[in-house]
Each structure stands twice: as C-alpha cells, then as structure tokens.
Length: 148
Image (tube, rainbow, N blue to C red; front, side):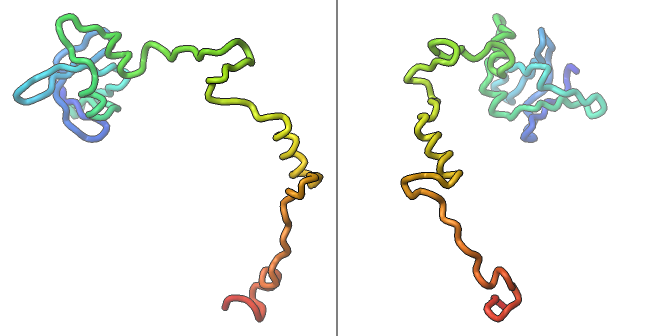
C-alpha cells in the first residue's frame, strides 16, 4: 500500500501513503511544506488495481487531525476520529431522577390528563377539537360547484 494515492470522500487527492503503524495509515501531503497525518484503517479502503486508498472522510477532517511526529500517539488519532474514548456520563441524581439542569423533563401529570381528555372529547374547558363538515364539492367533485 506504500506509495498509493489517497482520495477523500469529497474527491480530493490529499497525498500518498508513506507508512502503516498501529491501526493507522500514515499519509504525507503538501507540495512545498510537507506534513504527515494519519487515517485509521477503519476509514481507509484499498483499491489495489487502481493503486488508490479511498478514505471515507473529508479533506477538512483529515487536515484537522493531529500531525504525525516522532512522538506520535495513535490514540490521539483514534480519539480525533471518534473511535476511542467515550462520552462522559450525564450528571444525574440516580436511576429515574433528574437534576433541574437536565435538558429533558417529564410532562406535568395535569398536562397529560388534559391532552387525554381533549382526545376523548370530555374536556371541560371547551378545548375539544372542532369537527368540520365536508364541503359540497367534496361529495361530488365533478358537480356544478367544482373547480372545472
């Protein structure tokens, strides 16, 4: 795979493969100021016939990643691409209990009862949905009052 061109998902030729380390493909890019970045092998698909590595990432994601240096860490690259690490656990008070700062809150029981009463047509506040009769042209679409 060394020497293969690397093409991103947005059809940019970003460089060529210079090495494979850990679970990453090392890509050298740039014409005058050369730099090396890594792509996890998960996102790199090799086409041996064409001599191309097709990456399922965009050029921007590639160039925003950490540069490969002498003290390069593969975990930093995998973290950049979302393959290691995880989301922090939400700050809650326990199972089924939420903090006032949690983004979602349950509906008030009176609101639930009010919506159920509206659906059943037994609401006391006059908020029952109105049912309208059909227009005469709906019954006979080709009749004298239709849009012909």
